[in-house]
Structures are given as structure tokens and as C-alpha cells.
Amino acid sequence: MAAVPRAAGRPTGSPRGSRLTIAAAALCLLHGGLWRSGGRSPGLMSDCSPARRKICRGRRRRMAAAGPVCKCPRTRLPVGGASALCVFVLCWLYIFPVYRLPDEKEVVQGVLLQQGKAWRSNQTAVTGFRKQLEDCCDPGQLFAMTKQNSPLGKNLWFDGEFLHSVTIDNATYSLFPQATPFQLPLKKCSVVGNGGILKKSGCGRQIDQADFVMRCNLPPLSSEYTKDVGSKTQLVTANPSIIEKRFQNLLWSRKTFVDSVKVYNHSYIYMPAFSMKTGTEPSLRVYYTLEDFGANQTVLFANPNFLRDIGKFWKSRGIHAKRLSTGLFLVSAALGLCEEVTIYGFWPFSVDLHGRFISHHYYDNVLPDSGFHAMPEEFLQLWFLHKNGVLRMQLEQCEAPLLQSSA
Image (tube, rainbow, N blue to C red; front, top):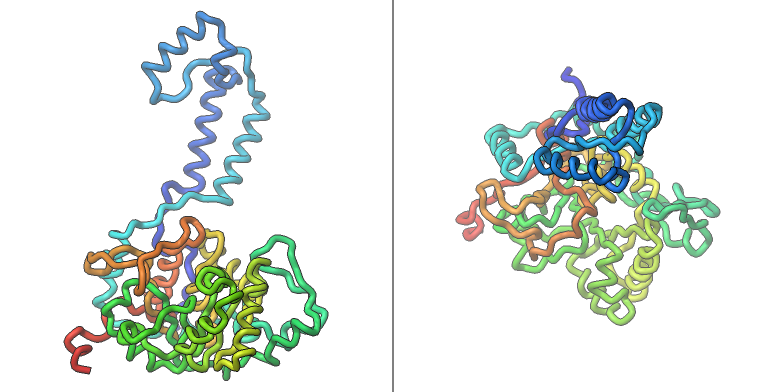
């Protein structure tokens, strides 16, 4: 039996220098400078005599690239202080190591090398990875808030808000289903991102052939897109920020909102009501709006314990971001809930595999806020799972344009 591959913390990113190399270099520079100055650190120009200052200026012009060379005897750094500083540098580099992610060209080349190989599911790897998810996060039980996992009186800590919690009262408890409303395990699942790589992909039919389809952030599914992204939906996420910006927090746009989500048919709308304080009210407004209008959609509230644990799970594997993207949350859930997972539209780069420019989303080119998510890091982790047979990532066309036109 092949060994179960553990999701590597940094699958393809290369370090600018190993932690020990960088730390050793810093240590040598510090101690080298102290040795040359007899335990003294470089002083400030204001501490030098006029003659000394003049000499320093001349030397600094000639040897700027060599670093500090002028020592002023008034400022001294005890050797013990230097040691403490070295320890601090070592700890900092251990906790916050510097890694260089490959650029777009390197990623595309790496993917192209793999594209000629037939993808095969590795059941051993699938089972092993699912076991890791169950041990840390238990998606089957904790994916959504239910009466079983969130009883009356429970103190619920928000995952995105520091030291903020709510106690589950009768009103909140009544919003939850009795248990996870899916017949587990789900069989074949499609997780559909919103990447521009889906344009002209012809993947709509293949996406809809899955037993369970998950989508991100209320994406458009009008007729101009369905041939590429499909029309089937069992679960779709909705960030509270979308409700605020697109539907004015449902203060005046309730009917517009209800009409807009009809395209998702009998689906679950998955919302993080208990992640941040600002997201609670919009999420509850969605719940009551759909209930008041007798809509076909049902709101499921994300369990903050699941979101927190998934965040820790991926952070331990090298993803450093303020928060995981919605797409990675969904893929993580799917890997714990589904027997077979195929993902579409997960490509955070500006060119496709043939070097052609593509928009950020299949429906627009609005870029995300810089620094909030770590999309390239997430992609590399998912690509690692693809190569190891844990999930399948669709990056090429599913149907050629000629076949699409005759369908």
C-alpha cells in the first residue's frame, strides 16, 4: 500500500533561505559587528564629535553598500543584550518564516507538465486525508449549526471576532435544523469556484452531472453562463458583505433578493452568522426574508467551531492569510462530506494554461482586497491534493467549442 501523503505545508513554494541559514547570518552579523567594536554597537551621528562625524560621512559615501562601519564610543550594547536580540531574531524567523511562492509563469509550467498525465483517484490518500479532516474538524457533524451540536444555553465563540461570544437562547436555537440535513456520505460532488478560467470551458454539463453541487458567493447563473458553469445547485454560500453591498442589507430590497436567488432552486444558502458581529444581522435578515416570502431556499448557518478548526488545519500546512477564502472552506467541507470531489474555477492567476489573459471571475474582473486571502498558496495546496489523487481539479476545457455549438 502506498503511504498516505500528508498535505504538505509548502508543496512547491521555495524558501528564500532556510530558517537556520537566515538566523545564522543574522547572528554572525550581530556578533561580527560587536567583535569589531569591542562590544560596542554602531552609534548615532549626533553622538560623535565633529571630527569623528566628518570621517564617518566620508566613509559612508565610499562604503554605503558594506553596512555600518563607523563606531561612536558613546553608545554601547551589552553582550547580554546582543544575545537576547539574537534569540528574538531566531524566534521571529521560526514563527514567521519567509517563503517565496512561485510566480504565475512557474505555476503554469508546473501544471502543464502534469496535464499530459491521466488523473487517477488514490483511495488510500482520499481515506487518509478524510481521516485528518475528521480528527481536526469533523465536517459531518460540525459543518453547519444544528440543534444537536449547538444545544440551548451553549456559549458560542465567534471565529472571526476576538473574545466575542453569544449564548444560544430559544430564538437562536429555533433557527437550526435538528441535524445536518444531508444524507452522508454524499457521492459525487462538484465544487464550483468563480475563476475566469471557466469562461468558454464548456464545463456546465459535467458540473451538473454531480450528485451535489456547491457554489460560492451567490454567483450569476443566467443563460449566458450555464454552458460553462452549469445550473444545478444544492448549496451556495453568501457572504454578509454581499447582502450589504448588493441588496442594501435587505432594508429595501427583500423582493429583489428573493427573486435573485430563485436561480438556485431548492438549495441551501450557507452563511457565517456567527463569525463576526457585523455578519450576524445580515445573515438573520436573509433567514427571515426567505421565510416570510415562502422561498424554496433554506439558510444554513456556518458553525464557527468548524470554520476556526479548518483555518488552523490549513495554517498548519502553510497557508498564511487573515482568513481562508470561501472556496477553500467549501472544498474542505466537500472532502469531508463527499466520496468523490471535482473542483472547477479554482485558478487565481491572470493567464490561463496557454498564456492567454483571463478575467478574475467568469462574470467580471473585480479583484479581491489585497492581503486578505492567500489565493496562490491555496491553489498550490489544492494542486498538491490533485496530484496525489485526493480530488480532481478541472483546469482545461471540458467540451471543445465545436462540440458546444452542436450540443
